[in-house]
Length: 365
View 1 (cartoon, helix red, strand yellow):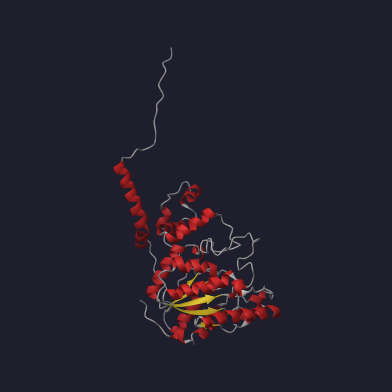
View 2: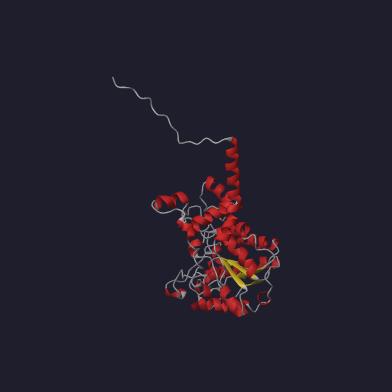
């Protein structure tokens, strides 16, 4: 007769006492509170002349926040905007801030441009990630391109392609017709914008784990040490060319931009909000409108654009915001509808530096 063995009952669970649970809870809270600050001491991030956020880290808003805080201490004037400021058609030594520094004869202007940062995205960027920008001089770029069509104004309901920086735009109000995310991801964005630990975790994903979360990265690299990426240095300052440096007319025809009514424009109202937010923080704001490539417009579109410029100028004058609406650059100095080539940035810097706002320096605090 075969002897029956009793089954072995076992469990991998660990039972903790009440005191041990308190210790775990305290450790977790301490880690969440202190880890991001401790990381800034471990991660080497030193500003160099003409620094700009690397293109591949355009969605690393924690890095942008850290960059802005350093720039406030190092520079007296911060230049904020989209890829026109960042420099889509140029290297970092060919951007508008670079040529403004050359006009000044020293490093005064910091490039806080972010590729793809349309005005609705700038509201979230300035509100949640540029809190250190206070009591400074700020040059704010207004790119009319974002008001040139319902699609770019994010009003097209049928547009299915995701747009840039969805995690920066208002998540619930105002309603953005082109924004299709479900409620749960939107709530997650609100948490991330307000919790430093969440911002830091996103930074690690963007800068060290190829824009993947930790579980996804480990699945894709099952035989690699998951902590090894954290030993690498940050990517260097962005210095790549995103597009060929050639005049727009070599491969782009004239275009009949629609130009929407600014009274109903989501992007225009967002830009107004960014101006007011920066001013509420004690900043002296100077707005640069364009310069849009008017050579690229058909005659009817150019006429409509004139009304857009007049509306922008009227609001800035009403709010007593100093601004410059530069004359269009030479046709061969544009790469497309809104991005200058190196010669265009150099010429634009000369125009701007004639303004008293640009010539007067303030000592960085």
